[in-house]
Structure formats: structure tokens, C-alpha cells
Length: 372
Image (cartoon, rainbow, N blue to C red; front, top):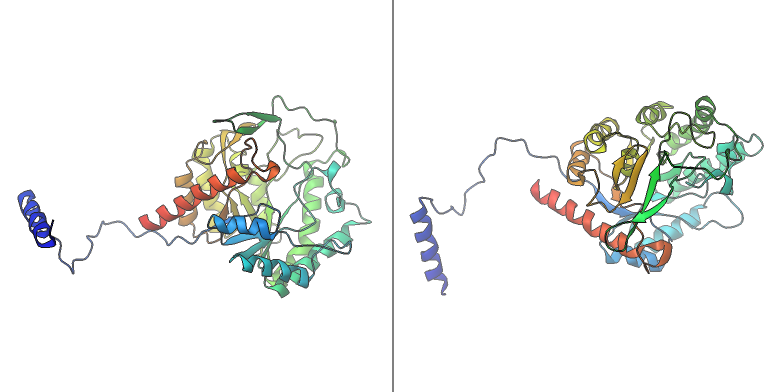
């Protein structure tokens, strides 16, 4: 159909409907609602390894911001400026930006398997040496222009009881506190009650937060995954496994550079009704600018009994959660974590499941940006 005939037909249809054709200079009608805050979040990822091959995988799926793990040589427990700059350069070759660094010290592993346990064991012979190494990493990150470090303060690592069938041929990791049976009654740490655990946390923060303040590098701690019943597990009271515990944690050595690697999945695991409660938790920490990174992970279930599922099929409304992060002005990375396992998916790398999650999060971000 010729353009003039098409336009005439369109005008006739509008006239028949009682509507006027839009003016070329018309302005959108006001809805009476305030405009939403701008969307500042960035799709990111922390999966490893930090190699050219894996960074190319990130770039393929639209990742631009990452958490990377730099090389560490010579038996040191911290990366040098040269090693950090080499990580940045490798990322830049793939148009990636390193927003967060994963250190050698304080991973999420179980203390019985941890190669450098002194900080969490309160081993006076080695604890100060390891804390000094963490301080050196902060200083070197500042010199290399890297803004943040993630870490854990955990003795038990990530607790699960096994896996169960998921949709298709996927497997979902499960936690059920009622059926969980530890391999040993205690860890090498022995009994660690709440007071003892808080002493170890405070000792570390008293020595590290001042350095983070001086060098303006944020340090982001992951919650305990998951919280356990009040009597503890393997003799350990997981004090960062409750919302009150996390509130107390960020109040120790109050600082703009001391906050959370906010794992939405783990925090949902601490709630009795995560779909209702997670939003007020995001607001409490987000309004205080204590969310430095987000693990945008979903669960099916609640405290003491849950499955780790794909983000689109869990108990938490992820669309609403994203809007809550926007509401509090969160401007950091939002990334998948603990993706389900599927057969033949590059082993522990789980590349297909990560790719699905990238697409899901990217779609949510683009829709939220357009709907603003």
C-alpha cells in the first residue's frame, strides 16, 4: 500500500473511533505518578577461572563488569600491584571491567579444608600475619585502581545435604536442617559460641576497616550460608546467618567502606517467608549503603528447608526484588550465583546454567530500564 493511502486509512480509522491523531509535537500525558529512579545496576559475574577463555565467555553474553581472582605467586597471601594490573589488563582485552577482587584469604570453604585458617581459628601465631596480608591487598588494590574486595568470615563454608531432581535434567542442591548430619561432631575449631565468633569478627574488622577507610577500598563480606538452628551446627553458632547478626556486623567499625557481598539467595535462606520479607531487608541495608555487590539468586523454600533453583522458578518474585534494589539506589553489580548443575555442562563451570542466568538478568534489567 502506498504511504499516502496508508496514512489516509489510518486517519479514517482514528476518526471512526472518536480519537484524534497524535501531534508530531505532542508531549506524553502525565500519569500522576512520580518517575522511577534511574536504573544503575550492572550485570556482572564472579565465576572462575580468571582466564582469557573464561573472560571471552563473559563478553559473549553481554557481561561488562566482573569479580576477578588475580594470580598470586611466591607463596604470598596477597596480590602485588603488578598481579592486580595484569588481571585488569586481561579483562580490558575483552572489554571487561574488574569491580571486585577475590582474595586468597577468607574464602567460603569449610575450616577443616581451609589452607589458611588462622584468622577464623583466632590462632595468635598466624592471625596477625594473615590480617597484615589482607591489609596489603587493600593497599595494592587502591594503587591498581580496583575499588572493592569480597571475603567470607566462615568456619563451616556452604552447608547442603545433597541434591534432588529439578526441571528437565537439572539437579538442585538442598538444605534441610532437620535431616542434616555432620561428618564429625566438631570441626578443628572446636566449639565456637556466639561470643567467641563475634570476637574473631571484631578483631579482624578493628584492624582492617581503618585501612579500607584510608585507601578508600570497599570490603564486602558474604553472609553465612545458610543460617542454622540456635544450637548451632558442628558446635558453631553462625552469627552471620540471621538478619540481626548482619545488622550488628555492619555496625562494627561503621564505615562507608565496610559492608556486604549481599547474597540474596543466602539472605532468603534466613527468612521464614522470603518473598514477603526480602524487600524490607534490601531496604534496610540498601538505604544505609551497605550493599556492595548482589548475588541475584533464588531459592524455593524458606529458613531451614530449601532448594537452590533457577532464578525464574523460586519463592522470591525476582522482578519485584530488582525494583527494590532500584528503589534504594543500588548501583553495583547484580550477578548469578550457585547455578543448578546439568549433565555435560563443563563440569563445575556450569557454563550453560550461567548463560541462562545472564540472559534472565539482562532481560530484567532492560525491561526495568524501558519501563522507567
